[in-house]
Image 1 (cartoon, helix red, strand yellow):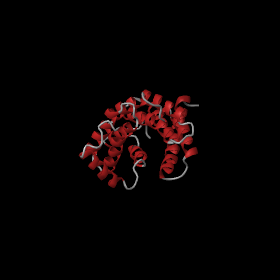
Image 2 (tube, rainbow, N blue to C red):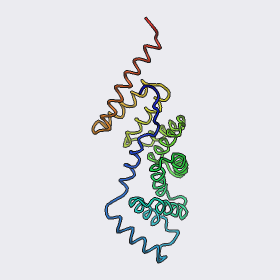
Image 3 (cartoon, rainbow, N blue to C red):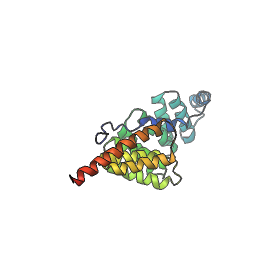
Image 4 (cartoon, rainbow, N blue to C red):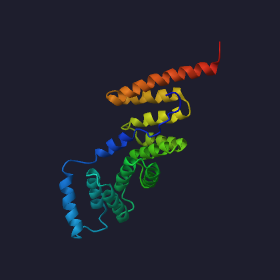
Length: 212
């Protein structure tokens, strides 16, 4: 952390990990069954939930293009059905297509107030260097996540503050993260980051105060 972080591809693995929990074992058989239904035209093009389910299965199988088509079919079937937006955000995140991720998450956020989708919007905006927009989405995420189920909010908020060279504020955000998530390799990395931020904060304060 010699200054504002240069690699703005923010913790993309977190996105894939969060979305990965949606996929359950046994979905391969479900995909075959749904595929047969579609091929025999029993599944109506207007059956949004089934198209979304198929999209999840195909996504899990690594069939990106087919999965994208299924999610889009679900959206077309019911524009107010939010679930396929999560699938589309996941596909965009896998490709690090931040423009698409921002577009999809922004559209979803007009339909519903879901903290995870606002968080994804913040990630997209951060990687697009739109730090003010990222901050606004993080504020909204925090308001919606009253039970603090997404402690990663604080890490990303800290990264936004690093861009503004507010190392003291960023350190506070990392401490907030560790208060809710103190175990695991990510917590170890956060502690190392906190030590760097504390050092940078101290140095910045000394520079601001000038020689005594």
